[in-house]
Figure 1 (cartoon, rainbow, N blue to C red):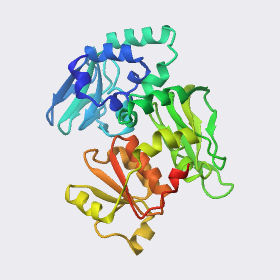
Figure 2: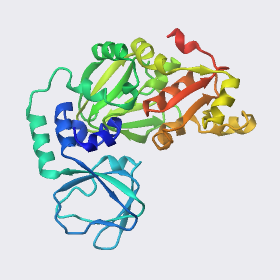
Figure 3: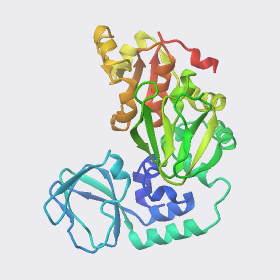
Figure 4: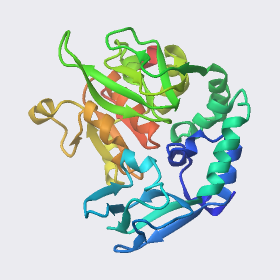
Length: 340
C-alpha cells in the first residue's frame, strides 16, 4: 500500500464518498497510487475554469471556494461536506484558496473512475459490506475473537429510498450501520407533532445505540434518502460484542489522576441540571448535543463520562468510542447495562 494509506486513519477513509463504495482490495489499489498534498495558508489549489485530473479530499484545515461572481463557500475538514471531493468537476466551478494550513488526499480522477466501474460491475463477495464496515475506528479496537464473532452475527439489509428503517416510539431491536446511501434522522416535536429533520447519516455512521443501551423505544425515525444498504445487529449481541468491551468504570481517585494526565470529565446531563450541581472541573455537553459535536472532539484526550445514573452515560461512552476515543465512566453510575 502507498504512503497515503499509512498516513490516514482507516476510519476516516471509510467515510469518504465515493471511496466508501470500493471493496477493500480496490481501495488498497486507490490508496497505493494516492498522495497527500500539504499547502500553507493563502495557497491557491486550483482556479475557476481550470481543468484538473485530480480528485481531492480535504483531510485537515479549511478552504474557501470562490465562484466567478465572487461568492464564497467555506469548507472545513471536520464538516460532513468534506466527506465529498472538493469541487469534483473539470473544468472547476470554483477557485480554491487555503485559509489555514491544509492537507488533502489526492487521487488520479480517471483511475478512480476505473476502480469504481470495476467495483460496480464485479459480483460482490459475501463479506464485502461487512469487511468494509469493520474498517471503522470502533471495530479496530476490538479483540480479534470479538471481530470474528461479529462478522458472523451482522446481517446485511437492502433498503429503498423513502423506507423507514426505524420509527420513533417503536421498540428498539437492532443496532444499524449504514454501508451505502444516505439516511435522514427526524424527531417529532411533542406527541403527534410533525417530524422535524435533525441531521443526515452517511456510510460508516451507526444508529440505535441509545435506545438499545437504555432499553427504551427508538427516539427518532431514520429514513433512507436514497437506495442503500445497512448492517444490523440484535440488541443482545450489540450489548455483548460492542458495548461491554468499551465500558470501563473508574473511581473518584482515578479520575483525579486521569485529569492530571489531561483527561476531560464530561457531564452529559442537561445544561439546567449541570448548572444546579456538578463536579468541580467537569465540562457539560448534553447527550443530544454530543451526537452532533462528537466528531469535533480531540481524539488524543481521554473522556470520563458522568452525570445521569448509568445507561445514558454508557450510551455516551459508546458514542465516543465509535469515534475512536478512549472513554470511561465515573464509578458512581449504575452498572445495569451489564444485565443486558
